[in-house]
Every structure is written in structure tokens, then in C-alpha cells.
Length: 448
Image (cartoon, rainbow, N blue to C red; front, side, top):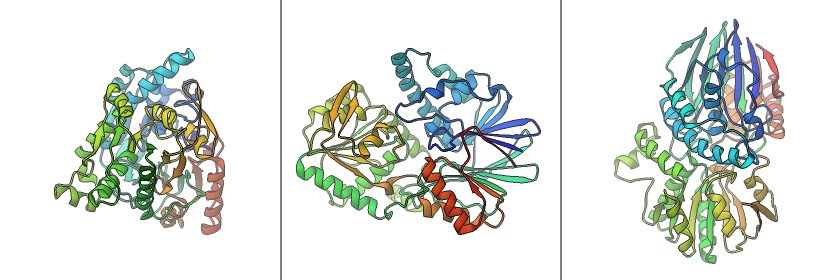
């Protein structure tokens, strides 16, 4: 078999792997490269393989850096089927429609044709099949199963068997135990494994610290009469924050101030969470069945329309604003950052990974000023991060996930991380398990 790393090699984003056996080809993920722009320029370039030759695509989860180029794949000649969990399919439709709106604006601004349109998304959904975890799928000589990755609701580890070999694609692995979803499943054995490394060189704070740190950020900002801005991914991070805010307000641990969810996408995705609540972990299911709406509390306002979003400005601080995008490379959070980054009483709180080149990363790295909508904005507010809110496993969790497979693995490919992070994890794997672990080059090929 041939395995080619068309995306996700020495990069956190753009997951895209081609697996070939007996001249038949499948893809695992078809994601978008993201950084300083919502979509980097290379996303508009032709695929380095013929979409018409791909017989199926298996999707690990619904984040744009794993699904964002699927409509273009279809537009450029793909005629096969797409497989994921049913939850991922539902999320993906909303994510792609929201993405199309942002991409259309970017394309217009840069004078280029859009990456895809809504008709391409509609056609894509017709060939997309939702399946259950552990349900066998046979396509083009490949036997495939999904396992729960514990990253976001519906996320999957993909196990592929062909030619008597087993290959594991980790997708993104969860920071378990997560507030709402089930823990990450472990795989007993495999011949080869692709493992993500977003936090391959880091350890999160203790999981119990995240709510305490959120409480501290709220109290400090409210005491100063400022605005707490939280750039948050609409999928999973916003729902986790709502759950913890609900607890903090219910128990009287923080002052009651207005909380705005200023993200139409997050609002729509939260409704899908309710549809699939049977997939929540036991503790959350117990709360839900006791009548506790974990995604709602007094003082919470969902701002769906542009007018409602603008009305947030009329509410005097202190207040909390949760808005997309999670890396500040688009979305409504930019309007709030433009307004409040220069305010020393306010706080910007990052709760997700900030990829290199993104506006969020520049702020987190200590930029004294940033450019938003053509204006230079000084950064005078407090800048804080809670990495324990990340939906990604840290180095210790990644090594622990690999442990059951260590006796059977022939080789490990460390992917979906910045180069330093990937190299650090690869070295730890070599040291701890005496296994061959490599960080593949973008576009490189491995013979399995």
C-alpha cells in the first residue's frame, strides 16, 4: 500500500491523506489549510491527485481543517461516497454552509473565484453517508471502522484494513475526560498509526483547573468593569463553556453579568447537540434527565442576527462575549476585538489552539498591536489562555493512547502539529516505546 501525506504533515491544519491499494484510492479527511486567513491560498490550488480516481472519503470529524475542501473535491470530479458518523454529517453541513459565506467574502476581497458554492454542498450531502461507531464499511478492497475519538461530539478514529495490514488514523484525539462527551476509545493493535500532535510538546493544566481559571477570569474582569472576550470554536468549545458557565452561575460562584453567544453557527450547532444527547457522558445525561438545561441559564442571550449582534455594544460592561472564530481569523469576534482590545479593564481569553500566523496566535504571543479591518488596534487588555479547555489530547494523553498498540506497531507517523510539536512527540515515542516514529514531509509517500 502507498500512503501519501497531502495535508496535515508539519501543519496542524489541512488534514488530507491518500491511501492506495491495488490501484484503488481512498482519502481520510479533506481539510482546509488555515492560518493568517480563514482559508490559505493553497486551498484554491488544484488537488495533487485526480478527484475522479478517489473511490471514497472517510471523515474523522466536522472541523473545517478536516472537511473544508470536500465541496471542491466534488466540484473537481469526485464521484464516490463520503463516510462519517451521523453526528459529523449533521455538523458538517452547517459548518460548510457557514464556511462558504466567509470564503465567498474572502474570494471577493482578493478578486478570485470562490472555493465552492452552496450547490456543491447540497450535492456533497447527497453522497455523504452517516454510520455508527464500530459499523463495518467495505469499499474498494478496504475494510473500515470508526471508533470514538472523544475530541468533539461524533469525532472518530478511523481504522483501515487492507492487504492483511491495519492502519489507524487518529484524527484529533480528545482531552479526556471532556465536560460533555464520551472518553476517547483506545485501539488494541495495529501495524501502522498516524497520530496527531497539536499539543505533542505540551501538557495541559489539570482538567479540574479549567473551571477555576474561568471563574478567575470572570471575577477579575467584572471587578474592573471590563468585557471578557472569548474567541471560541462554534463546535464543542462553545458548548463546554456554556456548561461550565451554567454551573458557575447556578452555584453563585461568579457575579451574574450578561453573557452573549454571538455566533449564529454555535447557536445552530447547539441545537444538534440536543438531538444527539444520548451520546453525552453519563454525568451529563443524568443532569439533562433531571431537567437541567446545561446550555441555558438566566442572563444568557443568543444573538442570531446582525442587528442583535450590534445591540451588544449598547449593553454597558461588565459583560461576557463568546464569539467565533476560535482563532480570530474571521467571524464576529473581530468586531468585539476591534472595540475592546485597547481597553486595559477588559480581557481576551483563549480556550483553543491558535495556529501559527493566526490573529489569535499573534495576540497570545504578545503583539503590542494588531490590524483588524484595516485599522491598527493597540492590545492593552489582559491576555489569558486556558489550555485545559482544548479539545486536543496533550503529550501525556497521546502517549497513553498509543500504549495498547505499542507491541504490534511497525511504524508511527506523527502528523497534525507544528514541526516542533511533532518532533517532540516523535522523540518521546522513540524514547518511551522504542518504536520507529517519523514526522513526514508534506507530499511525501510511505510504502506500507
